[in-house]
Length: 501
Image (cartoon, rainbow, N blue to C red):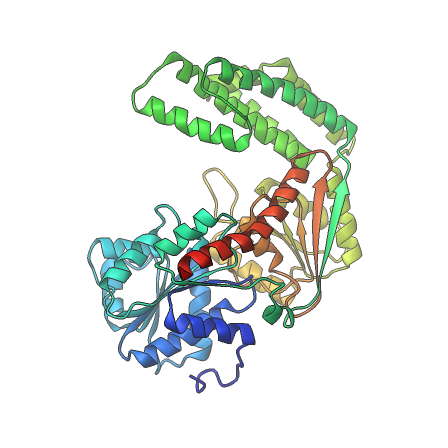
């Protein structure tokens, strides 16, 4: 192996994890930026030397990630050692079948390989290693699971490696991932693991609490009054029992729509469907008001007015006819005219000025917020901010994969110094290390929080800054996320004990 990796000395934890992976199907849990790909490369070389003429399949959930992995491998492996090929949806299945016959290492999204296997275009018999990146996705009906099951039954010499920064915080979900991938061992490392700690730089954490302005509180009060009316209707219609929040309402909406689709046109369900849809819209408006920007809140109300004007839905027409709704729209217009904004925006500007042209990533949940933040920051001297979002959704803004690539390149060479990103920048993409990561709002997901944090404090000292609005869902999301990160270690220990037994 050393002939290909002679310029690289694996870190102690990488060597230990690699040794486990040689003998067992292993789930590798390692924070972003700590070298999961190198362990995958070491195992690839080992398996191909052990089983000459056999193939390796490396799966990643998106095309840019699969491309990134093939580039990494080509950096160290000569063409003479292995013919490496990338499968994408742009290559038709007949062509892929031909490539499969001669390639040694195939990099692909799971959809391509799963579709080919369903058509019986080739078999996984000669694959000596299957690597699945972002393995926390191995739940429910994701194609990773279908491929792993086919692999275990077809391959002469199966070996599976799952890679993730965090498999989540629930033992049941981690067990499901392990079962789907036929995992025999879990190798977990966090920033605090003794054999990892010594390679990392200090991560400074700053929690910034901002006051929720009195004018915003008044609007929240009016919004809740309107929202409660719809929730009460759902209870009256006997379709909602228990708590009403964004998650329970979305689940309820799915249940109601499912019941109606099956031909049960119960009057309560018909009226409940409309009330539920409007309650979800008001929940979303409330989230924007509490945690995002006044401009995005106002823009959303305007969207609802436009929908009502086009008579797209009777429910929306009724919603915007409410005097409370009109008050919210007028009030937010007035405040914006007086240059009033969410205090988070002002604090963010202060932080960016203080950090003085360092390389920074700001994470936010919503594309509109990302656009507003970037516009605001670009007015600061020396700041070159750019939004980094996923591909365009229906009627929405978005970036093609080519645009995303260009932005990452510009960020690497300093053409851009602030990246304002949505969840697209969380998973695996090879974004250069940054001086600071800023969460515009806390998120209740341990997986996503760990992925975001991994963008800093690797080779040099880094900062993690979190903006939290007092007395809003920001506070509860912050506590939930911290608790879930702690839970992850305990959940993995439980699963490891189960695997050992």
